[in-house]
Length: 474
Image (tube, rainbow, N blue to C red; front, side):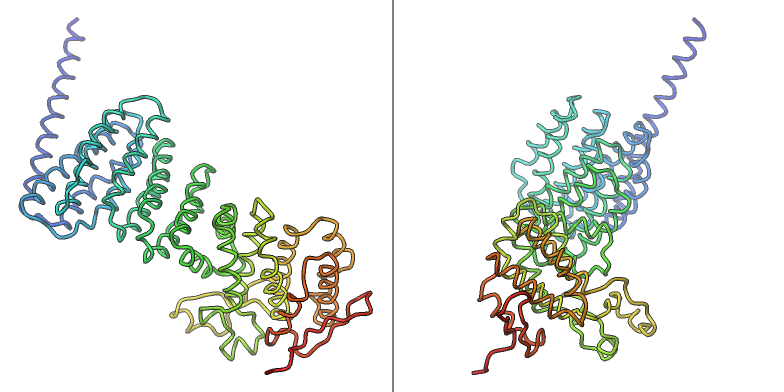
C-alpha cells in the first residue's frame, strides 16, 4: 500500500510540475510577443513548435498543439489591440495544422480547431467573420466522433469555412506545408491533408492564376516521394482542379518539362485526359501549340539548332502530350470530334520532324551559357509524332483499319525520309476510303507551308493522286 501511495504521490507531483511548466511557457510566450509584437518574431517562435507537431508520439503532438493555441491566442490579442500588417503566415500555418483535424486523439483534433479559429480572427482583423466562429464551434463538437468517415466530412466542412478567408497569394505556402504534412503525418491525417488541398484549390483556385506555375512545381517535386495510390491521387486530382480554373496556365507549366517525359509528367498529362470535361479543351490547346508555338525555345531560331537539325521543342512536347491525353481517354467520341484537326496537325508534325534530332534539354539562362557540347535528349522526334497519330487513330477507328495500316507498313514508310511520301499517300488513301478524311482535310494539308512542298503523291494501288502542292496564290 505504501508503494502504491508513493507512486500516486509521484504521479501527482509530476502532473503538477507539468501544469506549472506549461503555465510558465504560456506566460513566457506572451511576454516575448509583447516585447516584440511582429509577424517575424511570431513565426520564429512558432517554428520552435513545428518539430513537436510532426512527432510520432501523440502526446508530444498534443502538447505542441496546446502550446500553439497559447501562442496564437497571445498573438491574436496583440493584433486586436494594435492592427498589424497582412498576416503572411496564414496559408503556411493552415497547411501545417489542417491535417491534424483527423488526428487519433480527440483533444488534439479540438485543439487544431482552436488554432484555426485564432488564425481566422488574425487573418480577418479588418473584415467581419460573420458566422465563421459559430460554424467552427459546431464543427469542434463534431470532431468528438470516433467514426473516421465522419471525421473526414467534418474536416472538409472546416476547409470550406477557411476557404472563404483564404488569401490566394499564399497558396504556394499552403500547398508546400500540406504536402509536407502528407509525408510525415499518420494515414488519416495524410488523407485530411489531401482533402484540404483539393477543397482550397476548388474554392479559391480562380484567384490563383499567378500561382499556377509554382503550385505545379511543388506538386511535381513531391510526386516521387508520395507513392501511395490514394495519396498520389490527391496530387493528380489537384492538378485537374487547377486546370478547370486556369487551363492554359496549367498546360504551359506542363509543357516546359523536358523530353523524354518522366513518369510523373506523363501521369499529370493523363490525369487531364481522364477528365471528360477537360480533355477536349486540352487537346484543342495542344493543337494550337503545335501550329503556333509561343515560346522562343519552341521555335528553331538559333543557328546552332538549325545546323544540328533539331526538332522544335514546344511542338514536339505538345505532340507527346497529345499521345498521353488521348491514351487516357475513356471515350473515343472526343477524338472522333477533333479528328480532322488532330490528323492534320499530327501528319504535318511527322513531316516537320522527319530526319530531325531531339531538341536540347530546357535549361535556365545561367546554364545556357554552357550550352556548347551539351548532350541531346534521347529519342526520335518523328517516331514520337507517329506514335501520337497512332494513338489518335486507335481511338477514332476500328481495329481492322489499324491492322491494315500495320500490314502495309504505313508507319515504317512514314518514318523513312526516302519513303515518307509513299507512307503519306498510303495513309491518306486508306483513311479516305474509310470515310475518315474528306477532300477538305486533304486540301488543308496543301496550304501548310514547308510541309510537303510542291509535291503530287500517287495513291498506292489506285490510279488517282493526292495533290498536296499549294494552290495558286491569289
